[in-house]
Length: 201
Image: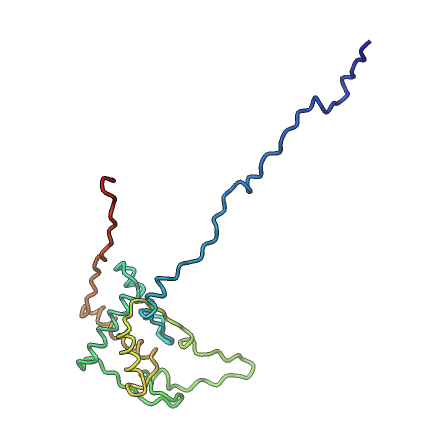
């Protein structure tokens, strides 16, 4: 006589084995980290200009004009500075450096730089001059233009910090632009074309 099985008895054979669902995060594909290609930067390193001490307000004006014209900031800065340099060569811009009693070099802004620093209490921290901590970087400057600026600011030239020279040239050039004596016209850049295989559409 067969033995009747209790309905409350559990059997391993009656329970189907269900595989655990795969982990969702493990099934997602993760992009492999790629090393950034610096080939373009290396090729155009000579066209990168880095200056310390440029007035940040003028840099913001350059950025605003570049945004309005939809061109790179370096293009606007280069055009404004080149215009100011040509005006200086024609005698329309007076860059008259004066002695700075607080520095070894001359200065183009004696009213700003030669003012004595106010006396501070010993407890207060002495903050460095903010302007000289600002570093401005532009692209699109030719090596010839950078050399011309360095030579003009050197000991054999005006003997002033190059940041002061850039500030003076930008200030003059931007005023020329505001008074419509300098026109900046954006031009469409040529694009390159690719060749398709014969018969392919």
